[in-house]
Image 1 (cartoon, helix red, strand yellow):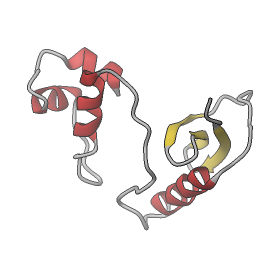
Image 2 (image 1 turned 45 degrees about the horizontal axis):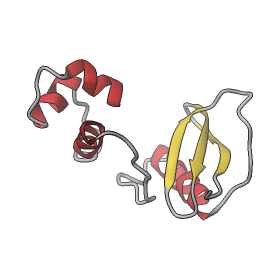
Image 3 (image 1 turned 60 degrees about the horizontal axis):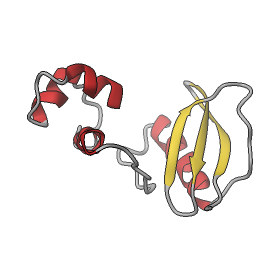
Image 4 (image 1 turned 135 degrees about the vertical axis):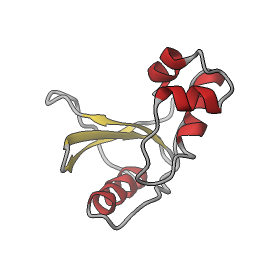
Length: 112
């Protein structure tokens, strides 16, 4: 079994926890104060730096590799999310329409 790495990250929006395998980011979410911390790795350090630059207004595109495990529908939604230009907000309906399934608004929301 491949080892997972995790680290709490401080951001202007609150504490987050990043989880990575050796070469990909698996999870980035707001942290519960009781979340366990294992140890850090290059990927965790990469997302920490990118978040810092993003919140400082110096980064508009993330480069940290992601681990996307999900259904084909979820992966389709996630790929569409990656197409959203920096600073633009879109609705779940817009994403559902873009993937050719405008009635899947709730499924898109769950995938996000």
